[in-house]
Image 1 (cartoon, rainbow, N blue to C red):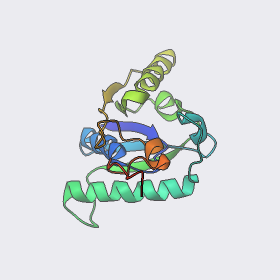
Image 2: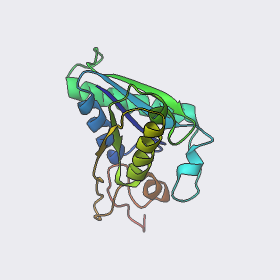
Image 3: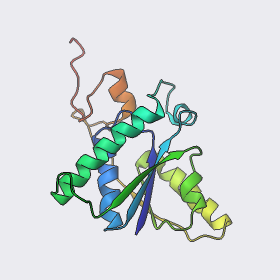
Image 4: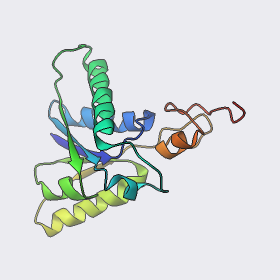
Length: 168
């Protein structure tokens, strides 16, 4: 099974971890392709303008997180994982999954579901089969609001959804 997902992943948080876990589980010994937004695309995908770390830094952080998830899943620190996870630069929000017929599943968040539907529309126009879209629910912070990179950067919560003390 070939599974795709995409994002900016800056910073990586528990919501991202759930998306990655779902993709790895769905791949079931196959492949996961993570589209990581390019430096040009990343700011355009934010709900509000903000700086994001450079692609190379985000890729390194994402790769480290994926390796930790694979080790936890397989219980095999430093060993071979049964799922191949590739990180590719995403230059277009619909790019890779809408252009390559070999994918089977697209993992999305509630915010990116509409983008997933657009990818299937583009695939149909290109004569490709639609992807199964798997929507992973939000991971909620302690304040019952979704964990998001924007909230983390603002200092409202940490990467695990712990509310930060405004007086600190």
